[in-house]
Image (cartoon, rainbow, N blue to C red):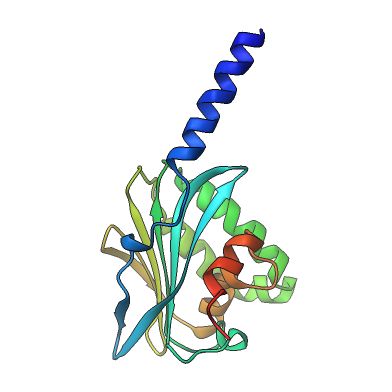
Length: 184
């Protein structure tokens, strides 16, 4: 039993070591968001325990302040996966954060839009990329590996959904801190 525990511990440590660090080079320094150019302002890693699930970059206007991140501005989250994740896991994690950030009234008002976005999610494989891009006046577009899956209209929806990562009660406080570390 001790040998089995040792081998399991070693395997987990090797897995963790193979997915450490931030992969800034995966994310271009700027993106086009409709007529706007937005800049990579932060990069972080979403982890469960010590195992990295994905690298994430946050893009917004260069002169943004932290209190403006969920206002009606162009913004983007790009996610690069290092492990496969099922589509239903995206929705479950998002609902958890949404319920922690929104009132019941807000959830009721946005439920159809949230369900529409969640229906767009697909299982991801290692090296797949999701992008969530909000352009004021156009909406929030979810893309998988560069292919748009659908767009949800409304700035209230965008603010609520970006709040999953950047809100008062995000999925992961450490990730939020990494994404916003260089924003005044």
